Amino acid sequence: MNTYSNIQLDISEGVATIWLNRPDVHNAISIQMLEEINHCFTELDKNGSIRAIVLRGKGKSFSAGADLKLMLQASKMGYDENLEDGLKWANCLATIYGSSKPVVGIATGNVYGGGNGLLAACDMVIAEDNVVFSFAEVKLGIAPSTILPYILKRLKLSTAKYLMFTGKRFSAQEAFDYGFVDFAVSAQQVEPLLDSIVSDVLKASPQGIKEIKVLIKKLNSTSTPEEIMEITASSIARLKTSDEAIEGISAFLEKRKPNWG
Image (cartoon, rainbow, N blue to C red; front, side):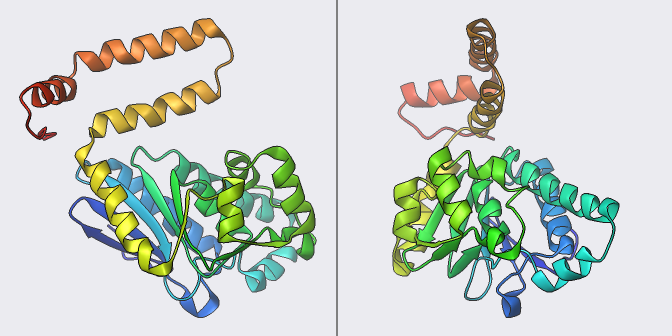
């Protein structure tokens, strides 16, 4: 793994934790940070020993969103340069969302603007109950463009419009009620809950989890019943003859823990 300057990577017992590491600016997101996150997720996806990824922020906040000082500098550049930056945002979010490993995001402190996009691209999100969220882009004269596809995977359209049109702040409990986060718990409960989720993931079939993520992606872009039948039937037929399926079924019948290898 490369040495990063905007993020920190910790690996322990099959779990990779990626920390946004600009705590002095509440982990404001620079283009370099996006590049590092994208590279890190890409490398972890190739690593068969990594079973789960956790995305969180150093310091008081997960992320205050895009670095506004750098954004102001970028506003003085041309369209082509800003298009390149926009594509880096889009590519980073797609890489997180497309990871074959389960990704758990941890929301702390303030989560504004693009920070919401990073969380929305995760598979599961745990929020401390004192977190403040905001889609603040409209107050800056811009829109939540590159993060919108992932926000709409978590929020119903009418709620997304309300929160994005107003830029209002909303609490962790409201985020849970809206379906934007999966858990809203006290600061003391975050680590035990995270440990419980990761423990369950590590007990599960790596192949099974990977296949679930692939199926979800395919089914989200499939419209006809015939295609759905073909995709799902092909998936189960292929998996049933795999080594992991044979081991998993045998272990269940023999009342022992499976050895996923």
